[in-house]
Image 1 (cartoon, one colour):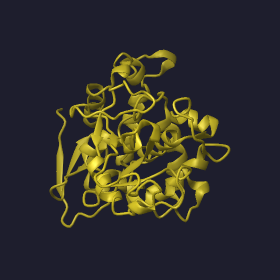
Image 2 (image 1 turned 120 degrees about the horizontal axis):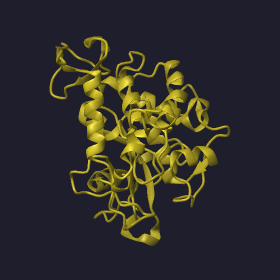
Image 3 (image 1 turned 135 degrees about the horizontal axis):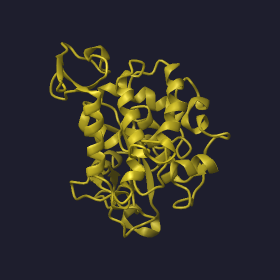
Image 4 (image 1 turned 90 degrees about the vertical axis):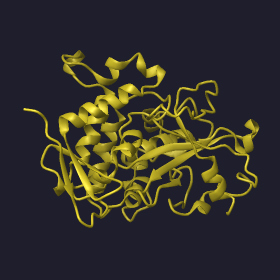
Length: 323
């Protein structure tokens, strides 16, 4: 029997999306332009998500397709690899009524900023499973329903307290900031194992943690303040807050205290010294889709152009020149 796609029109659709719009084993996809919800059969959603990842693999992952996605009858009886696990976990979350914000993410945002198993050229591991197992029970015990509220819990700024954050939930001792750690320690498993990282590792772990609970997030940063290498570089995190709100930005709590997603001026770097008028500080965010030709420059690997990017320079010049 051929698979059937279903569409539902929900008058006055609110965010987060109500999962009751779709029957069991169907993944909900909201429309950005209307209150229509597309219900995609789970097996087709898995196929489409897998094809998206495979068609946009960075060059160093393209030679490891079987390792990343697995194959039937794989080694040790495992059929799935790291990327396949990310596909299944992220789609399963969209169908779980306990975490309704996950289902409200449009497909294009989901594919680029929730689905991916990695951010840049950090080491690959099954961190998605570890993070979701640690954080989803915590979120289930809170009243968080919006992307901002979920981010506050994960980053340690909610009423649940810092012990409920990713910085404490996955480490025996609370993860802390330590400068000069990249590229020795910046993949999420190393950050968890060592218990510290500089801005890049802190940002990567926060992005992975947010994605593991269905929140679109990406690493963003500058390879050089004022375009001068000697001035240093910095990375932080952008979080998608909804169609109307767009992207907000924040540092992982160990790297920046007392910050919010909605106030640019409560970040230490968002000022006229770092973003003068006219601006000379370039800023780029990571993405997974590789069709734009824009590259995210890695300060620790400057000749590597294998990470697709989004040019965010104008956004930060406008936001931070006012602070």
